[in-house]
Length: 279
Ligand code: SF4
Image (cartoon, rainbow, N blue to C red; front, side, top):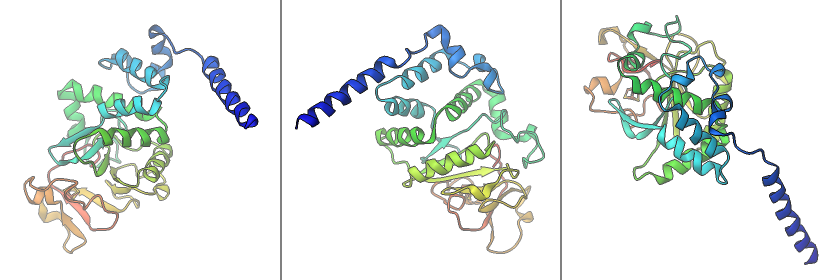
């Protein structure tokens, strides 16, 4: 018993020492230097709308006693639900803005930069651009273990069910690191279906595990081809080539209710109504 008391006291002292030894949080005027500094991103971080408050939220989460709980609220703010094509039980998470997408305007994307729906949306309305750039900052800062725990906590607070995570309605995977990070998130969140569309054919997709990859160009990767066509006549014959049910029903069937791109197995999908960035 005496030994247990000693060890308990020792543990408490140890925790107190850790707390005392921790460096104090950066002051508000130092945040620009410590959290999402301009030099670390391809866009002008300091011009993102509300960046000061956003940096303070991140600082407060990082120094909170319950770090996951604080991050769950940030993730909740920067996870969107429901767009014209996506059912409300699908969480939409972006790794970047469309204009910052690694494939934007390159030969890898299946549309010209000027035709990218998501980038046009960012040009026409400022808020999606600011929102997605904050999502990019979150994606770059948060480790997958905390991300998964915080996301689950965010979903537990929601009144509506969430079944699926759609990665990148704007933006794309930009490195092997992104693939490995999603592998870890998928491993820790088995209760969610996770899927994406990617034009990053230059990545090593054989390492992707636990989520579905729809390939947006003619490379040899992912679970199926997802192709934009000008008309249904361009769709090859046969059961392995299917017109997207959203297009076929004029928007009646939404992604999430339809799982053709979410399931790992299934036909190639063809769309005539383009409504994303790398889709
Ligand atoms: S095939 Fe289904 S999941 Fe894929 S884009 Fe069309 S509606 Fe969405």
